Image (cartoon, rainbow, N blue to C red):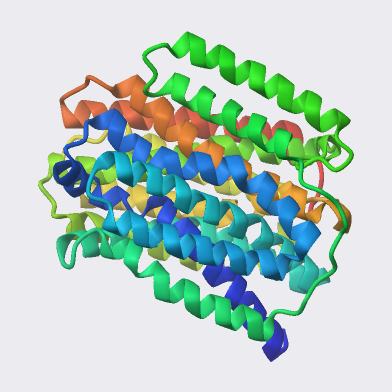
Length: 440
């Protein structure tokens, strides 16, 4: 890549890395946050879910806004909102306010995420795009892993709030860099599909709330399903839908979307429960719990760098299957955890890191396979929507299935069983939907 292209890719990746980082930076600080805010298990999970749900719920609208007003301008707007939201989260004094501000922060992330992937499609073609998408996909795994270390470090030293304050200067720097280096892209005249955005947010929020936290789960489940049907109806009739239903006519993309939900759900649940077990059972400090993720982080980064080369040799589908299978093998070994760290957790983490490093980028590439430029923003938005729905779904599902188990080892083992089932679903989906086609 020429120098300017590298700078553009760097700006895009830093912006995406920042929002992925905040998707899971609270995980190693959950014990401290729960103590500070006096939160129970369900309330604690909703500090994460509020971010993920508004992230996912507004992302389609964010992708469409980029198509209409220009992705560069909307990218910069998203960075500004994200910075304000981060500042407010860091200043929150109660759990209720923190959940509200995390939701606001999620709106900023919802604007940034689809525009970052669409900006890659605007500025890169051919092998350069393959490499750029590989780096982008790798950020999902690397960012989530690194956040464990940073979150633990901040919680143990300057305080967990600093993990949010630090976003402000980074976002401002990226706005300035974007204004200077990213070229203005094409704009598509049109209007917003507000009704579709509202129904999508209600549907996703209600269904997740029905799984985790609702006193009337059946009622919210029905509300979620009805809203989902209304969303589909609105999108089928809208002249400029935020989610063109034609993006689902491709079986490989459908497989990628289902796989994204299950895979992200599994990994987010792993990153959510493991730090708690390390602190409550092994009595690790938040920082030590974060450092405990180094084997996973380092291995993920190393193997993610090999993705472009391996994609050319094996094809996207086969590489994805290999990555998911390795991740599943590593996770299954954790089910039998009894005590200690190195043999029973660090080694399996390294195996998971190999699989995660290989899987995220091909899963991203499959989600935008054969998408034309007109629907680039929408398809990019769907990829990230599925990522955030998966994040909320995985944590909520495993939390609801393990709530009330007070023995930390038994609870951790049970969590790993459900996480392994989610990964097994991804393996099956990959074989049935994605593997038959060589996606580059």
